[in-house]
Amino acid sequence: MNKPLLIIYGKNEVDVSKYGEAYIYKLSSLKIKSNYKFKVLNNPSKLDKIADYEKKSYIKWIYSIGNIPIYRKVSDFLNFDLFLLGDLASMRNEIYQTFNLLCNIKYLKLLKKKYKPCSIELINLPIEYEKLLYCNLIKKDYSLNNIYLTIKSTLKKLFLFTKVIIKIIIFSIKNIIYSL
Image 1 (cartoon, rainbow, N blue to C red):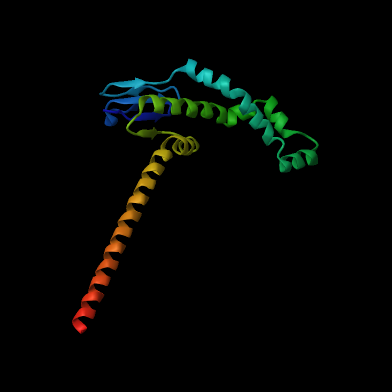
Image 2 (tube, rainbow, N blue to C red):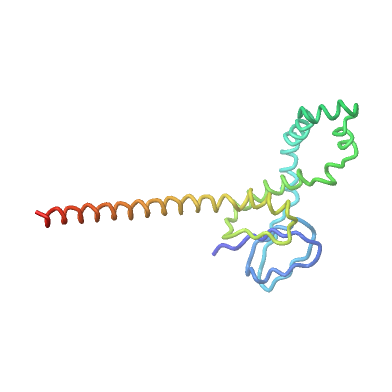
């Protein structure tokens, strides 16, 4: 029996008893309470390895934003590089948790592949985290299901359409025969 993967964020204690036995991944330091067994999948050393691997490509991506034409025009107009100021003040890391979340998503994808949870539940996440995690971890499963359902529905409609056409042809032939 597969267990659900619970991705949890918060500052207080969270009771996850309603999910039964579960895998848990914490995006913040909080206490987990449950009447069932649970396994916390956080591993800081593996997350650090992912961060070291992703660091160079992330830095290149961040600096490519600074080269966007509209940004360059604003910087030239002000005669001051706000991008560099934000970098020096480390404002980007304090305001935007993009690198941290990127590394967590990469690690969660590995966990999803390894543990194959029956579902993924997002608990107490800020909306920006929830949207990113949903798009990267959950939505893909549903899209495969939607493709299956679309094909099934199309085939069913095609079958019904064919059945109606055959009945119309049989009805027409019977009418022609009776009219003779």
